[in-house]
Structure formats: structure tokens, C-alpha cells
Image (cartoon, rainbow, N blue to C red; front, top):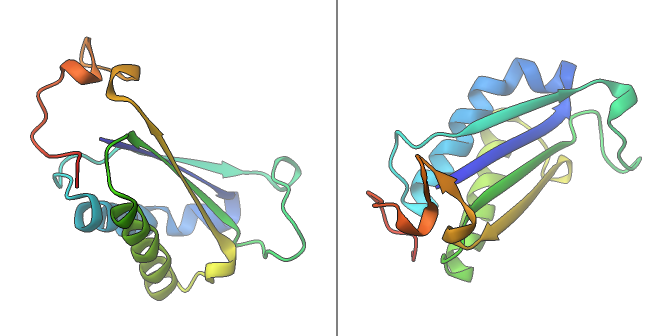
Length: 129
């Protein structure tokens, strides 16, 4: 399970939203080995007066937050980050200087899904990859 939040300036984020979602999902499938139908993405297009970032970033500055169950190896998480930077840059022409990614891991018992805590779920995929 991975929940994705993407933040960016409205005029930059909305035109690439669908393709960015597809790119992110392909990286999750390849790095985390999640099923193709487990796509949970939310986009937060921001107005300029609500989105502050350093002068070293352009108006394409995009923040990606990934919330997921803990259990993946450090190597797997680094591989996910590498894939995201490479594919977003190559497919959307977004500079890696304008991409910021945070992985937030929590124990499965801290998730509530389909009426039970996450540690009581029967998953169709492995978390310990």
C-alpha cells in the first residue's frame, strides 16, 4: 500500500497530472512490486500565493509525498527514488532540481483500511521487498 500526494503550482501541475500519475505508478510497481490496480494518488494544485519555495527552484517545483507501510529495505527505497527522478525527468522533462520526494513509513497497525487495522489485512503483495 502506498498513498501518494503531489503538490505543485496549479498551472504547471494540472497539464501533466495524468502522465505524472502514470509515471509515479510505474515506479511503484517496479520498485515496490505493488499490484497494478493499487493506485492511490491525490494531486494538490496550488495557487502562487499558497506555495512558497526557494529561488533555487523554478515554477515547476513539485513535491511528492509517499506514505506507505514500513518494511521495505533501504535499497528498495533508494531504487524507488532513483526511478522517480529518472522517469519524471525523462518523460516529463522536469529537472531533478525541481523534484522533491519524501517517503513516510508507518507501521501497518497505524493504518485503517476496509474496516480493519492494516496489520490485520490480507495483502495480495509483499511489503518486505
